[in-house]
Length: 319
Image 1 (cartoon, rainbow, N blue to C red):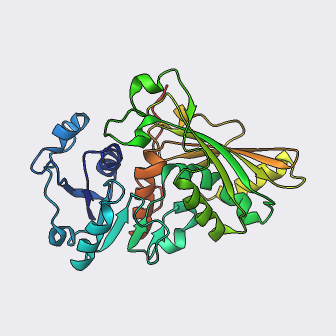
Image 2 (image 1 turned 180 degrees about the horizontal axis):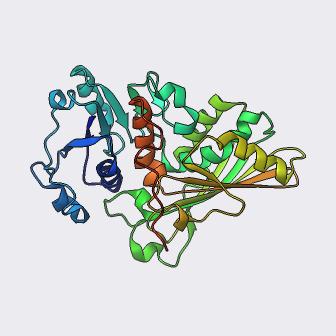
Image 3 (image 1 turned 90 degrees about the vertical axis):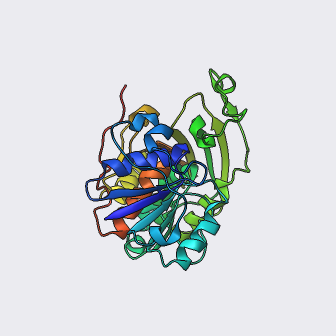
């Protein structure tokens, strides 16, 4: 099966290419760059030297329409027009890693573990955002149980790659090193995305979300306080394990997850406990992996009739 990637210079695109080159059943045949056409992909991402001889090409919808799937790793706002051109050329499967088509009619929202049956027949997939994935994966089992009885409150820390490859003051190393700060308090763009998704799972009132900028390059760890009357530690652990017992890329833990244990992986690690009337759920993902590229490949696997974890069951980069 042959696929192409549109957008090659960003961190998410680089991670997407890395995973596709490792996939045993998929051949990456096209890498598209409007800003740098005709350039060896290993010149754009030197770490791929000796691993790929692909040369970037301009965006050519007719050529891409001949592939089994096209994955768009372009900046937010850039995918909508490209998708319109691909659809005019009758392209097969389109998977958009930007925010342009999330919760848009006609698109399948690709939270892979919660949309399996829909993804198996999908030709348009909107891959969820990174914070949205980490928080939704933690909260969804409890929302689905019908026992959540108030707003969920979440604090989550993320690495600098979430800001993209383009230089910015907020992502500048001296600004983040040995530092922590909150930003977009109660107003992060993934808040409505999470709320919309969780309301498809069950009754969900609201999310109060505070994101933090952490002095790391990649990874997200989120702590969610979920109001559940008279819930015990055993109950919330069993509920979590029951929701994900058939999910090969979700690891339910007996202790707090750590970012370094999911770094460079497709895993989502989750731990749950209970205190008073709150379930406390902690989740960790690699924002470029499960939060973007590897989740896109989970979705791609399902649309192609492959096991959801195919090409993704790899260990973390340790220590």
